Length: 221
Image (cartoon, rainbow, N blue to C red):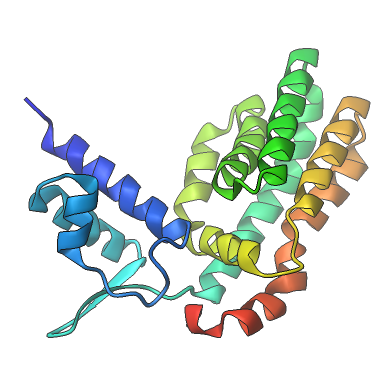
């Protein structure tokens, strides 16, 4: 027997992915029938997933009009960025005490995959490796619960990062280079440099958000 809760989770994850990667655009009206057909699911798990996405602030409903993808809330995105930057400056630094040669090797393998996906313009896969890079530090620090918490508050931030990817001239190659520098500093045990790089890396949003919003004003509240 198929577990309904599992179907709901699968529907939620699939629709969330469409929102995050701009397959469903900010402000776009949700056509429930179309989603049901695309996911090859019944109405119930899809409706339950949409309800959860509304509770997450990623959708909203207007009586007699329908359900829509929420526009990006930059206050929420900035708060998530601040929390993540503050936490990661300390957390990344703390891994100096536990990192192994194997960890360095694994991090460099992630960077290699990032470079391949970036060169091939496979941005969805690049984004996943970028997240895997950060998650690896939380894993080394034995703080995976903190990682899950960061993910739960970062929906608007991650949507902004995808919009950023669409703006001409805002290359993700800078982020890839920063990853290499962070691993070099980690391998060298350079605490000060790690904190500087993580602060610079996570602070990139502040430097570029005006250009991003200027290019896509219709996607923001």
